[in-house]
Image (cartoon, rainbow, N blue to C red):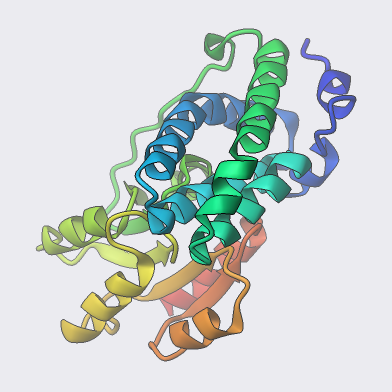
Amino acid sequence: MKDKNLLVTNGIDVDKSLELFGDMAMYDETLSEFLDSVDDKIEELSKYKEESDTYNYAVYAHSLKSDARYLGFTKLAELAYNHEMAGKNNDINYIYNNYDALINEAKRIIDVVCKYIGTKNDVIKEEVVIHSDKVILVVDDSDIVRNFIKKIFNDAYDVKLANNGEEAINIIQTDVDNKIVGMFLDLNMPKVNGFQVLEYFDKNSLFDKIPVAIITGVDTKDEINKTLMYPIVDILSKPFNEANLRSIIEKMEK
């Protein structure tokens, strides 16, 4: 049996995370998913730092921050948030001067989680194949967010996942049978962001066809007000829980 105290004594707020995940089984599975994706996020951060691409650096810092907040990695979430803000403010000096602190904390967390999990294969993932005429599209660059929403609705819907706005638009364009009954859309994503997807919906008169709910960790009033210019169903701030998501689906299905 895994020792929860190993996480707690290393500064991980497990109890706060369980408000979202509900039980240790889902939390443990999500920790394993974090291990599967975090190396790629660190690699992207390093690449965009070296290229001085502060926009995309901020996108990946935001994604790391969101994952850390969901999983109770309080210090990592704070550091990643500071790097996200530095990226948005084009403060490359801050990024360079504080990059090692961010990466060292990320590696510390990875080491703790690896010790707790044992190996990635210790968490068995059962993929349930659902045959449904109703499709929910989840668009978010966080594996944790996408998979969490999929677990909640996978018993009743065919849940399609997109890592960014470009993938989402491709899925929508191939939905010739009009099976998509709703979309959860993040705002901060690489390649094509959430605002660009909203603009695509507006230009192609898709809001009446596919209800859209925003899922976001954005805190600024300007960005929230910009979102409200579109006829969306609702805005769900991260972190959210299962009850929040089910309430949104009810609105979409009306």
